Image 1: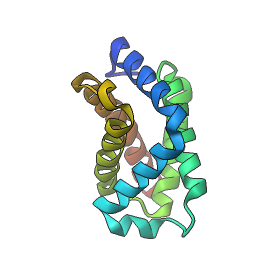
Image 2: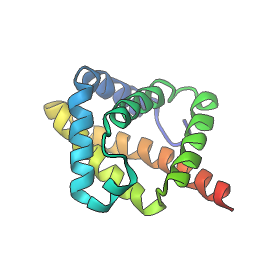
Image 3: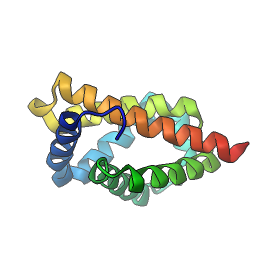
Image 4: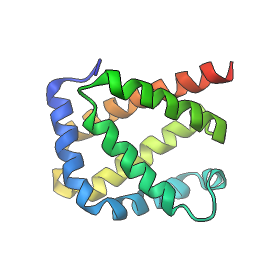
Length: 141
């Protein structure tokens, strides 16, 4: 994927492989942190977010698995951005999501979390979120 090095992709894939066994806990941590950072975001979700937690983990798994295949990843991320725009997600929400995601990964990975991992995940998230934001804006226009 443009902007990512092969080493960053390998690191993100290795990190995610370590998080997948605790994906339910990671989803709980993520949403708890997200709603702590911005309680108003909670209003965008139904009362029971268990399905959303599973969808989040599946989406991250798909994104990580297809980092080497932008032809598969980019259209899926564009569609995701369009849907999120219709749900009321704004470009400002993406920064809060980034904070919650990085914090969650740090908690889940423990000592495996490194400055290199943070940089790689930040780069991945930046590419994905900008694609989603652009897609939502095009859909709204």
